[in-house]
Length: 572
Picture: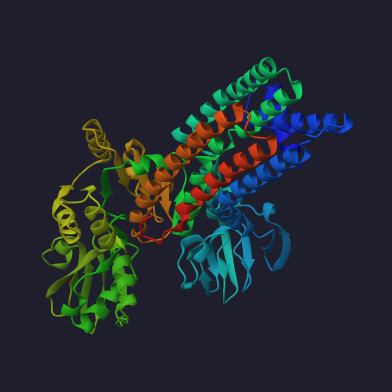
């Protein structure tokens, strides 16, 4: 049962270095060897129970360590487990079941009701309800049909689908998320490095203390057995397990808790850096507001006019027209019977309604004055025109998050490449006073660097390609779930849900994690300050030393698990 410690110690010695398993292994071997000698010689001080107890308590500590890591690691395991090993590939009129690894980009795949989607793809045929809860956190199914995109790992609930693979293997959304979790597990922050350095210094110090104890007691008492027992007790009681577990247990417990609350921590160093943040810079479009636009002030426009706009918008591929078509469809506005619709390049679409020409397009072409913001003009059958404005909706949880962050004392900034009047309007809704508009990507980077030079620890929250540089330049960075791939790559944390509400919990949890780390270092240092003099004085047997050492390690691990004990937005 002690083989893991022996293997690690042997590997370290072969590499000409010391780790915490070296004194552990030495203590177990000496305790067992001394006990064999005592038994053979008819002595009264065999410590088989000490060797066994040391191994037992150490294994309990290792088990709790793995359990504290399980929250984040189980998330990666859950995502990986969603991969479908066998896939139905479509070739003409034939279907064949093949291994997932055999599917290539561009091939057609069939997904039956109740099955997991094996690859990222575009639906070619069929419609269904999709459960995306494990990837997005959303509990309600989403209806999809032809031309909609789906991701690997999502669950097909109701109807058969045929889709064309756009990403397979390591390039799928599912695999990328699992990879990011693994990266979060393996990364180490400054505290971890400190613990490792301390353990590296600690191991030779422990050996020296044990040697001093043996020589000192041998000179003082002349009893080799007593001296060796005390040296073994020193080796056991000073095992640096608690010190080595101080940081990893906290980091993994915090990462697992954040994942369950809809946040993916990509970088272990993010916890420390997030706990020191005093300034938060938000991008506007796609971060504080939704990326999609909706038709504004529909209640002021007659339904008949909106129906004409719906018919004309459906015939156009222009992004503004598509936004109008989708917005009106969402409001249940049916398209009117507009005939001979055609798209006029550079202007918009026009057609015939009740014998008269109607148009939807640029204000100059359709004869309307443009309001502030994006939109299109609609020319009616009587020749008059109205403007259909488009507005961005605030992202769910934005108001709640901004209010909570302001109450916590963070300095909030809003920066955007959009026009000043639009940016200021959003800032006013959210109560943000520090606003910068018309900012190019290099200006955003410069703004973040200027705040850093002024002594601030900046958290950047952004989603677009134009935010990538600012995300990388910031002290810490967060991207929403809808962010571009480059932005998510540059960020320390990715929000897995649409809401910004978890931001406050992210920052509170990072502070809680830092407190737990400091407490763990204090526990480890305090234990050794008390235990070492007791062992050197000869008041601890190898058995009591094993129990005391293991108790300190278990205390550190249980303290780390306290990071997970708070509700979202609560305090620890």
